[in-house]
Length: 329
Image 1 (cartoon, one colour):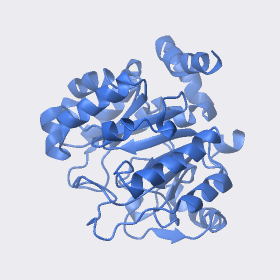
Image 2 (cartoon, helix red, strand yellow; image 1 turned 180 degrees about the vertical axis):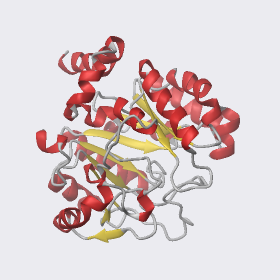
Image 3 (tube, one colour; image 1 turned 60 degrees about the horizontal axis):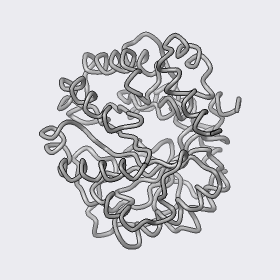
């Protein structure tokens, strides 16, 4: 536990597997945009072998879109099955377009559970979301279906100049459908937040923890300039559809390296990690993702945050006591 708390690269908290780079949407800001003609899908046996070797407590499956019917969906199901049997906290990150279709098949791998969730991207109310991604009405229908089936649903919102002014209204809506809300500032894009926007986002994270915000209080303080954070990039290890490990992190674009083994990845972290932790690398200078700083994935290891949460009794109860109660009853 303490090794994870300190950010030991040999003990990553989160394993992020890109099941495929094929997608049924074409979001302009996506880090994994592909022409869909030469898409790749990860080999199941390779993925399961890496999961066992790296042994992260949390495994996230994404794309592209991991719920596209056919081989991609079958691959996602098999990996989810292996993760759940191993007791991993398992999440499927989806745009939600094919969520209902996948759930209607009653696959046993996708049965509701306290350690299994779907995380759906919602970037605004109807007009804004449709401008950025599309299919808002269909996604809402699919979310209602999943909620009625008893699934844990998390949401992810990419925050940009397009939606920062609607943040309060947008989050009040999302809070009605989401068990945990994650807010991520857009990266290296002309629509990225300026310092004023980052401050507004940070203040929202600090002041609205009652909404089950997943981002940490320390991350909120970082965005408004009240504290510094080193980037814990090696606490979220990213696996590509080819089975290679991306270095330094999933959101690093041009100049990223790809290694064949976990040991080679660890060697690179040990040799070059300080430059990325301290944001000396060029692409890191305007990045505010910081990988690890998404609260309930790491809060059990981040003691000063837990102490701060005590000052917010309602938040403490919802974030820590309720999950423990569900786990042991």
